[in-house]
Length: 411
Image (cartoon, rainbow, N blue to C red; front, side):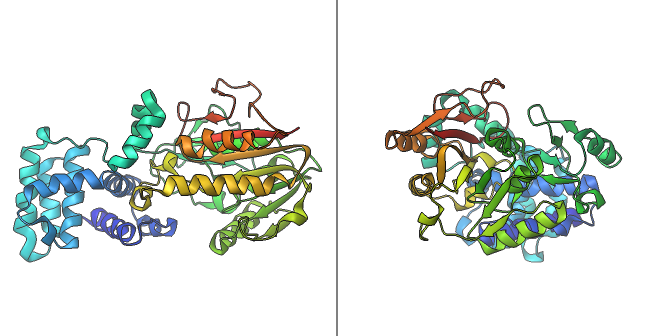
């Protein structure tokens, strides 16, 4: 019961804020590995399928709109367990009935028992807003099923920093099972809900980073003495990777978000990888003309709908609204335009987004290329991998999480 109560508290914060902050998972630190894994499954799974779970629950309620929030959340969790997890149904019903306020115990018990009896008739479907499902179906075609499959869960990924991957794997093997990433030579994958913020993490031996994100550094290919700009640096993960690969490059970090900058500073210190300079330029509003021809390479890891991360951030579905994708694509194109002049002749701009929509990927690049005769798209990985380069960029959904990388050379 303790695990479910903690999971409910985390879930409730996500619903209230339309966002799950990372620090909220500290509530699970006292749990053992198995219970921590259950808590994550309950929170992520219920968030991912909240729409369909609510529709299902409402079928069994006489007055759905009058259901108190605490009861609604108990029913959501109970329904998710019954429909998705291998937990004995009687145990699930008893647990959530016991957790319910006294006056609602009978209601929770009755609804969950009825759901358990009729679960074979329940169709959870894709649990996406219909407008979003249509966009993704049109954009992805046969890959839509792959997207839905990958939106169900996400494995924990790390990048070796201060020590080699093989050494890190041996070092962490005492606490967790790890497998090597296929494409990134620094990466390891952990499929369990293990808390890895241990001494090795604190010492900067590794940092958390998905494989697709690690491939950005391979595409950018930092070299010594180059001036490199990470234009939307976020928490500094890619910035630190560039410095790790080429310590004597001049790497500049920029982000307008002060909270992310604070996290980035902490990460740079922990990893012992500090950029040449830290900026907080607003790429859409500030005068950036003084940056003209300053950089050999620029990364624009642009703000996006983040639909490629639904497996690990199902709260994305709480925030996304009709029109958001169009607004994001407009911003992405404007950022590209403003950063292009900062690139030297012969320089390279990497454009990346953790999403799968055509509007934010190929369409942005296509529109940009049409307006710039001196811009040429090349294979971000020079044919070294089997990724499908379509002349504009690479969508990695078939190989890992949904993530897009385009490499544009200033000819």
